[in-house]
Length: 95
Image (tube, rainbow, N blue to C red):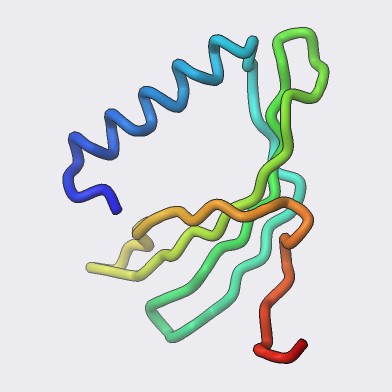
């Protein structure tokens, strides 16, 4: 949990610097799912790929992004990393 705007900025700045050290160039979205929860809340599930400057694959990832509508605009409320192999899957409590 990041508790301030400064903490969020620092987190993403450090992440970007770490990626640049690994020859990162750009990312691309592979797939997106939007899961409505209420009229003003949803989860966005995204699978993505990151590429190196030479065009080769750096890594694959996935994440959930909780969003909510406030003052007429959708706002990002957080990010939860997910293993790419579980993208689009929901645990139903059954084994």
